[in-house]
Length: 364
Ligand SMILES: [Zn+2]
Image (cartoon, rainbow, N blue to C red; front, top):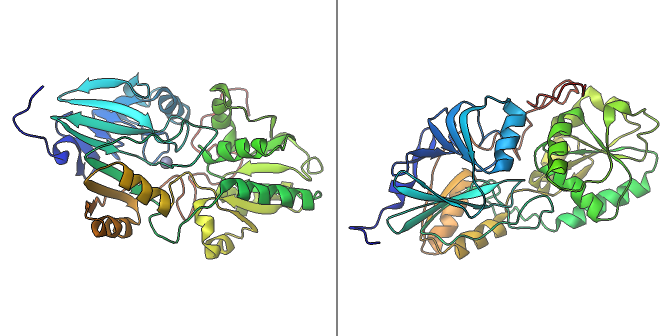
């Protein structure tokens, strides 16, 4: 096929106030306001919002949106598999694994011989709960920069799990409460604890149950899980329980015997943040690429244009510019509100709060 002239990346995806818009394809990617046609990278609430006319996403992302927002979260839905190509308007779109959470995808938009990849959130390290990040060569790469500063080097997440398990062994009379985001992080932490050989029951805050059960239904083995609300204080001694980060400072913690408070997040690299939240056992485990991951990924995409969004945009833009890449901050607003936000979580942490999740009937 020949074209009169190559398309510019901006013709394929263009930053607009409501998010990335494709003029040639007639759709938006992860729009922050309701649109006719939305392509969604993953289920975190800052990327996946209800109320769009038509939604195209992986089956897992569609299922997670349905669990959070109810059956009528969109006018119509269509599932797309990793690697499958669909023609939308004058563009071809393909979804590729982003390695961020279950079902997460990078979205590749191609037209007129030009290819733009919107990564959504991503990480380039192993995660037993989702398909590994796939490198997609492109002309323009749209990268997140949640941890886009050289100070953020996440290190080995398995070493952090080792820290947790040593503490559990050291304090058999105390409960260990691990704050973790309800979609993705909690299930990854549980899977890593299992991989490290811990096979006792793991306890869940009410806000974690529905999504965690969904992961299990998709074949992710998380071992024996129990609800905190069904356990006595004595039974919780020496156990590990997962809860939304905000629950760590909640009255809810009183049901545990002398709890050790832990928090699994990339932000735990910053000691002041751990102290500020009263976290005794910071665990540096992130579902976002760290500085090394971001720069390595940007380099190997082969893209000559790098667009940087949500996070420390300027530092990564500067790094790209020094390497002769054309880079710019997108300045999109409305992202980074759910997962890995520095200062909170969507849930208020009370057991009555399901983190936006309607619980199936009979479960409460
Ligand atoms: Zn995310």
